[in-house]
Image (cartoon, rainbow, N blue to C red; front, side):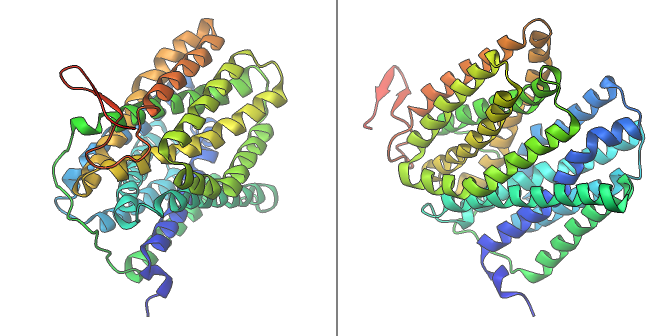
Length: 398
């Protein structure tokens, strides 16, 4: 007998997110220790591994070609299976080539799943419920990450489990949950048949621009804000772990409320608030001298990024419903373009001025703010922007 709760696509999205987070959070939190202690990686090998990890994200547009052969919901299951297998194998291949291969498999599963999940969310959820549900998904992934971190801490402190066993347990649990969903949930139909070709539309240009800028700012947060904690303020592994726990605790508590806020005030106001806040945070990063204040900025930084769900809900409102699946892959690729060049180019800037890296992040926030102010109060298909350039400046109503 199939479980009744999986008859609701919203709850299927929740369970998919739990399965993904269990595997991916384990892979992430153990990675640095594992590659150093077991694989004896230097900075060179770690850099290559992280570049390999970003390749599937950059190639996310290929999702649309896979959907010529398989339905999106089943592709989500296959992606989770790739993620689970990649994670469970990681501990058994502590070598350079072994880790490159397992990372590529894990990352392909993760990025394809995230692409398809975004598409399915916008297809299965109504416009009115999307902001709150997306917020709840962020809160749920944060809670799952917290529980995963606690399990790993307990397994190290009291059970003395090795890397191999922890990776194996996490990957197997992800696989078991995926099998449970595959056989326990019906196949849900979207309201509109999706196009099976790449879609790039001029009318979506603002969505593409906001997505690109979001990916660029994200790299500064992920790569350089965390590095600042260790290099300048000498955060230990325990300090970083506590910071991660605080981050996910705040997201667990506030993310669903943020989703409701986006639904209430609208995308333009939500993104305006986010980018004003991020401008101040990046500017503060450049001049902060207190380790505690830096940690507080890191937590706020992470929380502000939750407002980025407004970019997704904006697209849901302006899109031709048949474009959602195709555009999800294109958008994920656009979001990852920055991952190709920002870590390397900004890393060179960091060598002579870490402050300048964060000031450049503040400028990115200002550019994003200008873009966000171009969102109408009531965006919809055919009314995507306030101003557009089409043979000159064309102003539309607010």
